[in-house]
Each structure stands twice: as C-alpha cells, then as structure tokens.
Length: 479
Image (cartoon, rainbow, N blue to C red; front, top):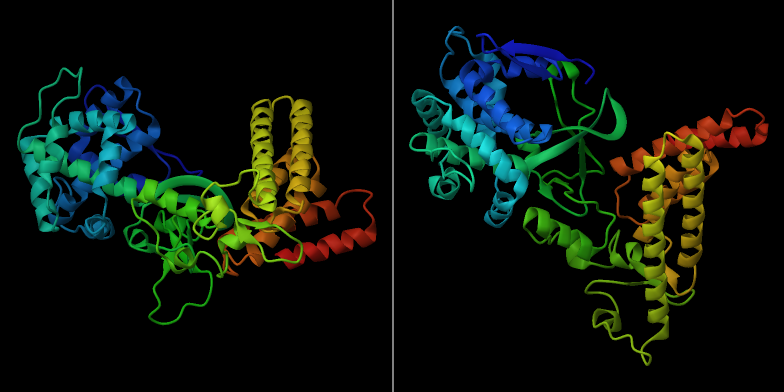
C-alpha cells in the first residue's frame, strides 16, 4: 500500500526502527514487539551480518509472530492488562496454522537450501536471545493450542552451522527453535501471492501471506474458484478473497489451482511433484484427453487437415513419440510436427532473450522500441511455422506464449495494433480451449487489457470514424 508507518521500540540509547506498510500491520504486531523486542533486535543484526534479503527477514518475523501470538492470546501483556479482544483474529489464525500440512521430503529440500540455512542461523540467534521464561510461555501456549513440537526433527539443526562460533541451543530454547522450524515450513508450503489492490484487477504481486482457510482448499487443474487480494477491505487489513469461476453445486468440493492450468498434463504434474510433493489425480489429469483443456488441444499437433489433433507429449501421445522412435522409417508427419514444435520453441527462446535485453536498455527509448519491433518479427515467424501442416493446434500452449510476448513487445514498440491482435489470440485460446471456466480471473485480465487497447486506439487522432466505432464496440464487449 501507499501508507507507511514507522515504529520505534526497544528503548535505550539505540531504539530499533521498523517500517510497516499500514497502521493495521503496525498495530497487529504491537504485542510481538512488546514481548520479543530484544530477540527481534538480535535477528535484525544477524540478518544484516549475513546479508539476508528483506523477503527472508519478513519470513523470520512471520515465524516469530506465530510463536508469540498464542502466548498473547492466553495471557494479558505487561502494561496491557485485561481485554485481549484485539488479538482474537490473530490467535484464531495462528491456531488454524497448526492444521496446515507440510511434506517431509520437501522439508529436507528446504532445510538443505542455502537460503533456509541463513534464515535458520538468524532464527537461532533470535531464539538464543529469548529468556527462559519467554521460551516456556511459548511452549505452554503451543501445547494449549494443540501443537506437538517435533523436537526430534529440529535437533540436528539446533546446533551451529559449519563455521559458526556460537554455543548450541539447550532446553527450553532447543524446543522453541524446533517449533520455529515447523512454522517456517508451514509458511513456505502454504503462503499465497497477493496481487493487485484498491479493487483493481491487477496481476502485479504486492506481497505474500498465509491465509489458513484458503490454504486448506485443495488443488485441481480444473478449478472452480480463483483467489486474489483486491477484494479485501483496506480498513480490515490484508484480506484474501475467493470467487467462483462457474456455478458450484451444493456439497461440491471447491478447488483452486496451484499451477498454471494452461500447460500440458506432464508439465503440470511435474511442477506439482517438485514444488508440492504430490501427483495430481484430478478429473482433468486422469482423463488427459477428451475433456475441456485436454492435451489434444493445448498440447495438440495437427498431422493432416480436417483430421483430429493428437497430443505431442504424455501418455496419450502417439506410441512413436512416447518411445522416441522417429527414425527415417518412422512416421514422417510426426517427425515434421516435432520439428515444428522444436522450431517454435527455439524462436520463443530467442524472442524472450531479446525482449529481456531490450527491457534492460529501456532508458534508451529508441533502442527499446527497435528491440521490441524485432521481437514482433521473430514471433511472426514463429506463428508462420506453427501454422504449417503438420503443425500446432490453434489453441496450443506455445501459441499463448507467443501472444503473451507479442502483447508486451507491441507495447514497447508503440504498436497498439500488434498488442491488440496478440490479446485476441490469448482470449481465444483461454475461452475456446475449455482450460478455463467462463468467469476465470485469467480471462478477465486479458479482456480488460483488450478493452483498454480498443478504447485507446479509438481515441487516436486521425483514426477513421467507422473503425473507431468498431474499436469502441469491441472494447465494451470485452468489458
């Protein structure tokens, strides 16, 4: 948000200063600062010494918040006796966090990562700075909220890392550190990006948060909900909203998607296994083809005119492709389709690289516009190749990538007409492939972009009046 609140605390000759994005966040963490002021100071010093980035420090503060909030909810703070109603929602959220799951295999990967090693060092320093009574209060409150502290999982990590000249933690600090590690994994596994703000339909990520009830919603590659931050009330603090993308029957389970659903079956499953440690068995993945957004569409190849398309990858692809048996005696149409796919991918790589290089030189507007114009030419060649027969299905996922790059490059090249055409391609793919429900957020985002382009072009000086009327009508239709 635009609001900034600076808070000084800790007293003494050098009080610690923290900047919050809103008065809501500053007030919600008042109890944390009162209870663990010295530990926060130690964590800040340790993070600066180890050059921990701000996102990592935010995670550390989030972990400390989860450690302390249950304590504040079960006893009055010194100097703040009596009513603790202002902590009801945070305490409820902290208790709901205990129901969120993690996966041991992914925990090990996180624990072994360089970033988590630094965060662990900062946390260990902060826990070591706690008093014994603070530690016992934290553990008692955790027990009261039903949390089992998995000390055996954190024992191996409670000792100093290689090269650290600090004493190993002992009880009760060791158990608090183990609990902090559990909270770190709960946050890592269950956080959601927050995009947009002020009620506008935006895709820019403005922050990350853990919303326990949203985190309980399961995944499907054919979701019936989408989520986003713009619907939260600024007066009520950061709020994540969900909306239905289609009619939902009474008793029907609700789903969100953890991945981009406009990807082939194998890509979606691979990403979920690597990032969420499970294999998706939703109805769309189990069918593979013959369903809205099936692989014969978004990963489809056309081998012959007026013939059904077939998937290029995955279990439903032709046997020759699955066995990689495309020798000279193999199916020439399959070989030609595979070459088209590989050629389009190569052009996409070239266009992406050039667009990034052009964006890096954005200060030189002429150079940036020329680079974007060249990107458009590369993408035009990619489309020509994709349109061959054998070639790619009209709603193939690579066509969406071409169009997304083209919409961006058109903007940089001051070619609104090119951006408009590429937006139309994206919308056609999203709506006609069946991969998205009618009211999916992704369709809304590109419909809004299309409308903005139409209205903008209609107002350009010297434009033909009849064409301006058509653009305005198209923009209203998109809205």
